[in-house]
Image (cartoon, rainbow over all chains, first blue to last red; front, side, top):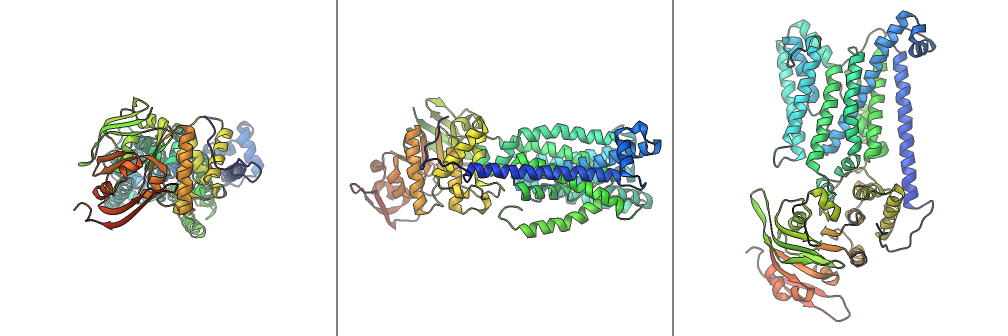
Length: 360
Length: 260
């Protein structure tokens, strides 16, 4: 390609737009690195926190060489704390990624698995299993609650996804469909709670509040698998997803098949959200706040927006996990309550402090 | 080698927006103006050529039919700049223009960055390079959109009212720049535009649409006549072509209600 003709001679130097752009990129990368370090530090602190008080050195030794540690400590670290802390990270990352891409493809700052009814559907699925013992997935066995929650969460996502395939449907319609789904499943959940026995109701409430206590290496593996399946799809479509933020017409003008991109991305978001919600229950605000922090710090270029959203989500969940163990010593506080309680004032302060032109 | 349109029809839902557009052509190296009243189908025609709206009929670019090509394949050859610019994207001007380049041309990043710098300088946008799109004025946003269009180096550039939000200085600057760019790059440029004096000054060829049909096409002095303006726009106008001065088209009065 030839150089374009332009009005004035090219001026290069430390003050030109390229240098300033490269400086901006370096700043963004530094912010990502700082968030990644903070997330890893929170993860280590999460592993170090728990009912049993062990010195950090012993914990790290048990982490690196479990055979040399005492059996109890090795079990505590490898069977309880590590999978739980990893699950906190993975769920935070998954929900933030799902929220970030839902907001991107639906052109709506409020879109996330929670506000679009995916969490409500999962709760209803769990309620079917807990209260009525009904399974929507055959042969789920002991995983009946998880399998039901996953199936219903996927169903809700696919309903929103399917809406977009109808002729003449706009993205606003997809968002409204999500809100309708949320109200529908909340109503069904209310009905189930009304019919439930006291014991079943308590179990359902505990599930709905969100908990990492059910974490295991299997749930960690499956959550990681969902991430490994969806992340490459997001990364490959990075430029196209960024272009989508300019508006459908501009994206189409750039040769992007907007409908196909939106469908594929929605499917990936559904998988991430359904997996996370099925294993840990309803976790609010992470999918909403993670992307908003990323947008404020690095903007919406997907090359930096995506990793920053994921890391912010992971960091929030790790911090919430630590807080859930330390808030009332000896009691594991439901993490879903904490993410909402921390997330809400944080979210409000973010939007009030920034007051920028865009969504922030 | 040029753009030819024959028997192009387009319907959106049940409404036939373009019942039949025929006999249009545009040459490389010059600006072609697409004019007509509101609702004449100008935007739809540009979108149909770009493949954004489905259309039937014949459209050839450099003797190759483009109506059967996918959106992706068309975007390799042409670019449509929409009229709507209301993006809330949290992207800097530099990032937005780089994005337009990276979705079209595979090249080392340093080469893409140099192209972005050059085009921002040409459109007097360099000082705004780090500003977010949402914080730009309408005119600034429009110039960024023009930069996004041109940096893709399309063979055919379809611009939908690209100067509607620009001040007088930037209207002249942008059209003058596009005229030189078309000549230097041998590019076909079609501009939907309402300002007839501006169109007469820069465009060498005109397409005139009314109610989704071709009314006239030809050079400025052939098309921009009092009779044509009365028929298409329902106005009485004074049309002057003073020697060594820009043409002047002065609307005097509306002859009747549009569509009446």
